Length: 220
Image 1 (cartoon, one colour):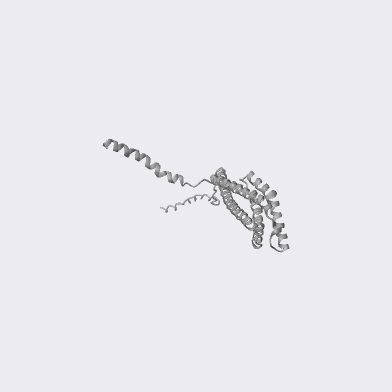
Image 2 (tube, rainbow, N blue to C red; image 1 turned 90 degrees about the vertical axis):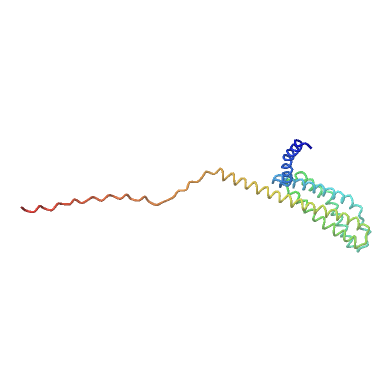
């Protein structure tokens, strides 16, 4: 290869290599506080959407559960049936409305917390009914266990999203408070420091010189 061509290749590489060296550092740069908050809002919205799908599936599954045919004492079947009815009312009306309210504004965390509390209580009831079906040897046990597993996964996802959103909100508030304090400090006038050295010293009065009377001349 001619020397001129070699020099041209080396010159082009000297321009490309610094850019390549800077690329990983740019890609690894941490997101800003605002970006972290936006990402947390997206994650929270996605978790609510997934929960909505899980709740809808449970709503369509519960009517197929026939507690009356379970091989269990009458009081046990009665309790399980009441629990199933309670879950049906929740997943067909109360919980979907709460999820819709939270999805309307994912930037607000409090509606999502309300959803989480409801899901947490719903999970406890579903777990109890699923375990009862297993003890009764019912064919409904597998269906209920599948629904319980799906609800647990959605609940865990929502809980993690709430933690992320809360931390992002706290970081954003801290940044705003810091910026406000800095702006207030910059706008405040500089204070003057006065040093009190006490009363001023009195000027010294020069002492008058005494006139000396010459002695009398001796008699002649």
